[in-house]
Image: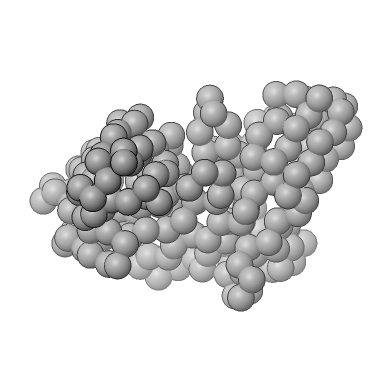
Length: 115
Length: 105
């Protein structure tokens, strides 16, 4: 398996532009997570899905952020309009939900720079 | 939110054992303790997990106190490649700022 796939790996955009980050989870995993990492705040959970349904989006900073999971093999995180303070590394992770324990597998991340 | 407390940074001499502590006083009885690490700017990577008993795998050992309110990750013979940020979590979802481990040559 190729692991969790994220695209693009790097994104540079100007303030006010729309940004779309993409994630393909590991096949067979039914939970997907979006995280944001900055030096100041560490690794923050933004939202997670179980069986394509958003379960907890309390970490989404504001209405400019939205996430979708139209099917089990694809998710997007959209920022519209983007702001410089959105600059961060965004990680997607997936795992199998249920059972006693299950480790999460992280993608390589998307480094976003908003100028 | 689940809360864990870890020291922000630690140093360890190469070849020595690195002992990384974590407090998780609000853990519930059926929640596992997980440890991950993040090398450079890669995504975090799973290391080990445990419930009550001490655990060991090829990467590390995990010591959990009897009251389960804290745990220690042990890297028995640290190498320069173990330089990373180490996270403990017990709800499998929330990660804090972790401990930045520096291995000194």
